[in-house]
Amino acid sequence: MFEIIIKIALLGISLSILGLIYRLIKGPSTHDRVIALDAIGINLIALVAITSVVLDTSAYLEAILLLGILSFIGTIAFSKFLEKGEIFDRGRDL
Image (tube, rainbow, N blue to C red; front, top):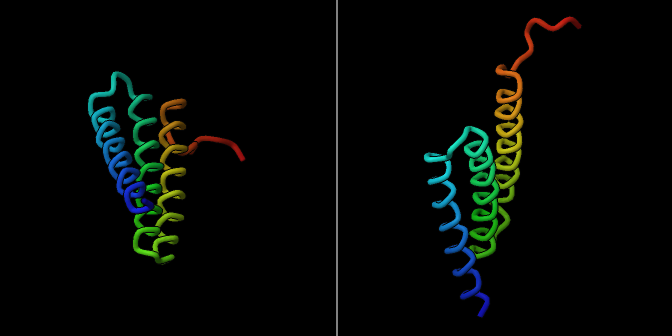
């Protein structure tokens, strides 16, 4: 029973990633594309976590942490770019 639920979860996450890739390519606005990219990162984390459960190993936990950090940094950078038009504030007084 557990294996069937895991396979259904993997299928659902995979379909969700495919739908988000479509939204990333055809998104009506840049904001939709940024949200789709962030959601793809979250779904990749879930996919790696479920794969780790299936393989009964904790070796993928570092990959999950790395994906989470990169997804977070990417989302912050994109949102700052959309807000101000630049990522780094170079002309700012300290």
